[in-house]
Image (cartoon, one colour):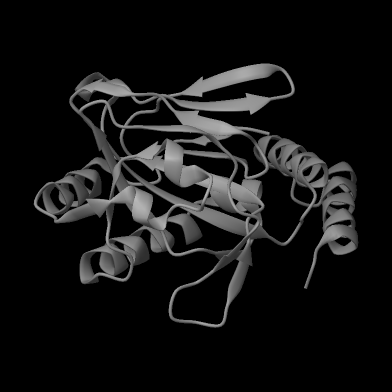
Length: 227
C-alpha cells in the first residue's frame, strides 16, 4: 500500500531545512549502500550522526508524532533516525530493495524495515527527473510530491529514483518498524480507522454503530499488534 501524506512539514520549516541543507557539506551516498546497491547508487548524503542531520531528524520525528494520518497509516513502533540525500547532475538510484534489518548507529537497537518513507523537501518544478518509482502489484507507481509532503510504501517493494537532469532533488528518508508487521493487516486497520474518523463528525459519540466499529478496530489491533 502506497500512502501520500500531505503537510508533514509546514512551508516555513521546509524553507529552514533547505537553507541549512543547501549550505551543508555532503558526502558520497554510495558509502552507506550495501554491496548490491552500491553499484546503482549515485547521490549525495548528509553524514549520519552529524549535528545537522541529528537536529533536522529530530524535527522530522516531532512532526511525525503529531501527524494523525501518519500514525494511523504506519502504527509506528520504532523509526530509524531520518537521513537526508541530494540528487543532481544525473544522480539516480537504480532498482533496489531496502535491507530488512537496520542497526541504529551508535546503539544496540535494530529496526525492522516494514515501511519506507520519503519526505520531499523540493517543489516538483525545481528539478526534472527524480521520480520515486515503486513496483507494486498493479504495476509501477511514480511519485513526485510537493515540498513538505511524504510518501509511505512497503520496504519490501523494489523501487528506484530516476536520474535528475535539471536542478537538485533534496529529501529526507527513513524506515519504520510498525506495531503491525503484516502489510495487508495494516492496510485493513488504516481503512477502518479512516472510515471511523470520517463518520465521527456525523454521528453522536455514543452512537452504538460507531462504538461497535471502534471496538472492532481496537480488537483487531490487539490481535495483530506486536509488543
